Image (tube, rainbow, N blue to C red; front, side):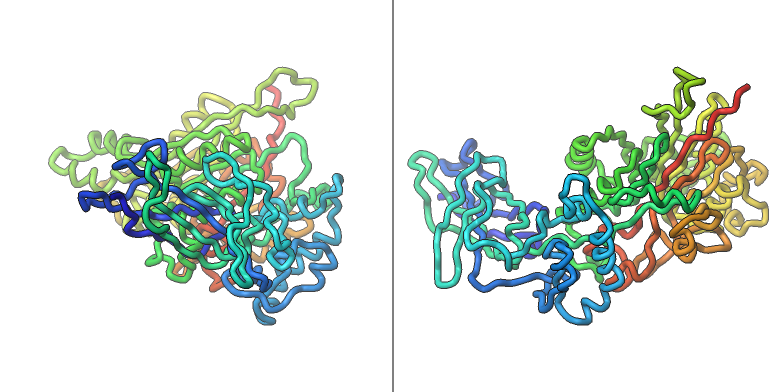
Length: 574
């Protein structure tokens, strides 16, 4: 007889919006183990599995801390209650928690006092971008009966919500009949119960006793403090800020660059300071998607996107928000590797080519696309003219002992862009994680168009790929978008300037872990064809709150997102 041997969850802390998929291990009549699902449509050994999920609601009301969602709340901000801020954001686990969070918490009060939604739905406008808890109402305000009218989880038909059992002060509500379940805002503060039972395919009768597991209380997905776009071209522009932080300009476009931290690298060994549930891909993918979509960028450049995650999650999810996605997989047969093979064939003696390729052939890639704008800022005197834009997105090699390879990869990318620039009058953006600190040779090449022969990064060049040093140049007029915080004017610019390194005109950091803090990510643009209108505000170490390190429950990557708003300069008449 088919029997359930084991049932468990990768994490026993359920989070709103993050799918729960229990691992179910079966034992077949011949004693072999079977880890796959057995739906009614495909029975195994004459049996299939039936699943149910329950929400256990206690008569005892429990509130959850908005900053430390695994902790029970002990106090509530009355200012939030008066301002009608979602209740889930008003609870704290201790006076110290409330005091430490006040700098960011009071932003909610300020926005609630100043923002007015034209449709009258103020809360949705204010908190919709990062609000992962729906209405934000926690169990202290839930009714004693389920607020959902039907079971909405899983791929099976919808069923009425039923009270299956009441035991003392507890009531069990059936909320799902699928193997997977995604907790909703109604589940916050409540324990979930998963039930799995073997069913005879012929008689439809259950066989043996159900196997069950209980979760911890459902917690709301932590919400990071909102990041606003800061105008850099004049103080008067601040008046045109929308309630969600966007600038209502015409003829402009925004570009986001973000290393999202691949799941393969998000291990507890590397990030022991981050809770294991916040490192799980089921949680991080939803949190990352909320953040990415919330920025509403016209162009999105992502790095460290795993192939299966792109195909199964990001491509379909971003499509729902109107994005068309292009993807370049990291393999041994693309981009920089092809250039490496050509280089070694031309410069390296045949006896040394294997060693040379081992040094040069990495899995780094670059993706270059040419886009056409849907708007035109050329005016009525230039009808029918197309506005094109070239965007490059890359992730450069990480190894610090391969500085020659890093520089060669960046040089190869820029030389490719030069060829495009020679054939077309087109604005250009160069985005990505360059794994290169400001002042390094790759950064010098980007920022100044050349690398000095005395630069220490080019001393080690065992393959001679950087010689002659005179070739370490490019003719693109590239400028770092975030350097506009140093040169710019406007409300909010002075505050952002304090988060910049004034000597090199770059952010103090774009990557922040327990072991490293520094700038590795950049957005560069051709200054002869584009101007920067506004920039996404930078984080400071206080903004990271817990342990001043990434990733965290609020921010699901060890990098921060960079975003710039650009305007195309009018073309010069020839």
